[in-house]
Image 1: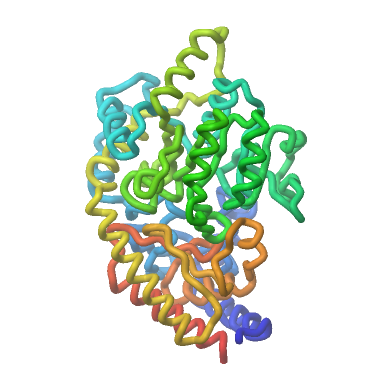
Image 2: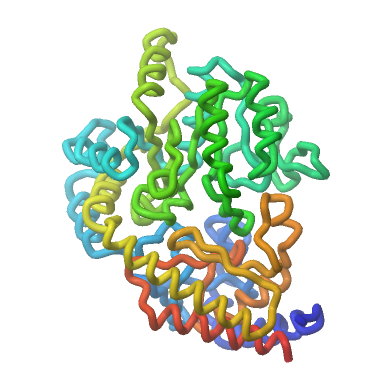
Length: 447
């Protein structure tokens, strides 16, 4: 059994160890007074270390800090660098594009090639480019409401779809509530967003049969509240009910692209009406795409013909800039390949087996969940069935102590929960070091 006292002792000891080994990082944050909270974006403060590590460089699946620490990187930019830091083909293509112009607000031949690669990989015929997945989700919500003439969307409790206001509704004791962490929200989002628990087929049927839901915005596997797998048959039922009720099914595959080539919908089904993919598709360059079926595209085109001229509320000047197009085209042509996925899935299976072995050896009532190249250990005995159960099972102090212990031994996990990513360039030696450090951490917690 791991006690609260043991967690506190380990956390204090590891914080001291971090401070001693990362004096440059501490000095950096002390001097960076021009940035709010010493970082250029506030999420960078979410790491459990006394101050965030300051990155100097990264290549492949390895990151080096300004303190000279070398890390086996299983965070990989929280999925942005899922396929490795600065793949050589991407670095070369970006360097060439930088000398040829970065943003034209005009189509390019390379963009035409990219659209064909997107269709081949994700099996949807039409596409648009945005700067982030958040922006893509906002665009998709607008389109879905417009072409269905329905006001509401449906999301799942605990889901994350970027900085999209409509998705910041949770369930508390079965009732929808505004997420209390949302800054500056003045409109009641519950008027236009319905939220239910993932895997609840009865609640899903009731909501969709009301006839006012434009789209279901879902990750096919929930990934931002730990990982919550779809119950057997749930996604098939979701697809069936959307079709029956004229509701559009949107898969946000920004994280579940880890499932396999083409994302979760292609690897495991069912097929959505629309898809959003961000982060990793550009290798870390800010860009995202949303794709849709021919039927949806026809409805969008009809709406464009009928609406008055003026800004649609969709897109920015930098959307589909030349650098982003080059990044995505290069990634899909040379980096995000079936062979890359074969390496990733084999490595993830090795990681799962190693973690599970150490959990059994330590007699812990924890478990490991895998979504392709995405792996998490959860400090509870059974896999949660929905976001509510996943939140209740979380142990933030324990998770933070584990993360800090691993970081002090050269292993980076994502700071938000126990997420680990295996890239096409992650080595077996890195995986084995992670498993060994995890075992050492568990032993230290049980002392």
